[in-house]
Length: 538
Image 1 (cartoon, rainbow, N blue to C red):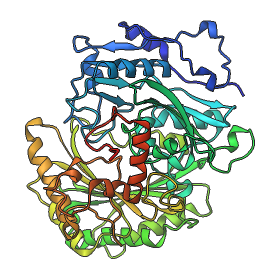
Image 2 (image 1 turned 90 degrees about the horizontal axis):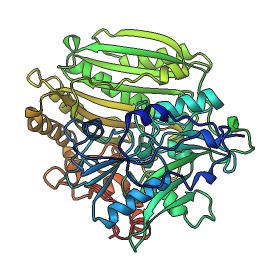
Image 3 (image 1 turned 60 degrees about the vertical axis):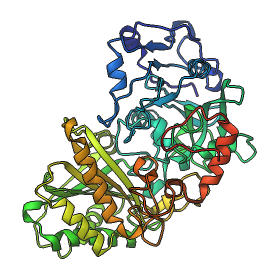
Image 4 (image 1 turned 90 degrees about the vertical axis):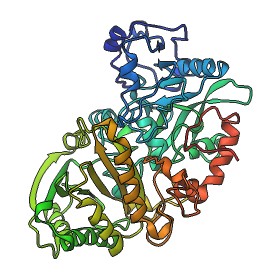
């Protein structure tokens, strides 16, 4: 089958005028099948160098999700091909300039926008999505957003990958951190469908080259593939391309090589107003939600097609919201949804406003529920839950979230997990948390930069007190299982906030960390790629 691509380069070419003398031809194009477009008509833009004096510099350095962090690199390099990435990396290494990589810009902490970074590689224009018949897999460039990937895979082939629920997230970092989303209970994590990747690495001599690593047992580069199935971004090199195919998929028909999403989604919400809630009602909602997931998160459950997020907004937000969706094509989806909502609301005296609607899968999936508007400064933390929070933790959450004196817009989000995501061995991928039922994302947002310290302190105190019994962090035990590297939190490396005696590396990677260190030593021996939470060789 001919390669089907999506690259809106004409508008980019008109907008980006400055150039740098780097290779304009992708010498790795032979890895993909032939294009139906006459090669004589295709123009590949040269890599762009955008210095601080360029009016585009501010856009490229401030497009991160968290407004608290804005980088000041010597230049931003907008790249279009693997060959250009190699050239930019070689130039940076030879000049002794620290490198960071940006795909979608959704890093929640300052790992990319570190003041020490001198060369920022912007991958956003490497966003092609195609089918590679030679590998029987779907090729996705690292700068593509999830929304773009979902749309192209579904409209062109009727398939999808079980990635995240925010369509503006870039594939680059999402995949390397072990991304999950609304279909993970039915189909597993996105990395469970990762067949191969291309990554630009730097050897001991300081020379960059591109390597393709696959999941094939006989591939000598397989450990490099494994490290990118949850090891986190910015550790081993610059990922330029991914190939996705479900393990065990056979044949050459692209429509049979990845999961098919449901044709429709039944979506429902239940909203409680803080003005109607008391401590007992709050506790009942959180307790019921945890108990339901403990009882309904096994692989093969009738609720495998359900995904939800319980948004524990604080008093300033004004509501608690349970937002859920279920495969609209299963038997009795309305009955299953009602049963779920009733279970979470059991014993709650406060009224809940419920809504329900059915939408085509793609239409519902491409909506962005995470636009915070002017409230673009944030502090976030994460946790895996093996069971729901206990009474003391729920009481602590109520104390913080009900405080009328705190004006930050805070939400503790509890995302459905489990199902097929838990049917994978902890060491089969670099992401070891494979028996949790929920993922928690602690967030608070505000607009005023002068209030940064106050809001950060508030979130740090909340998280510390919720996990007071385990040293202020979710140490792995019967209730917790550490944290998620795609919710990076540098506080886990700070003994002031992590008093558990358990390292941040263990909280994120558990027993997989030594193996990740071996990959680091083999593929980035001079530690070219590093940040505040990066893997170290020793």
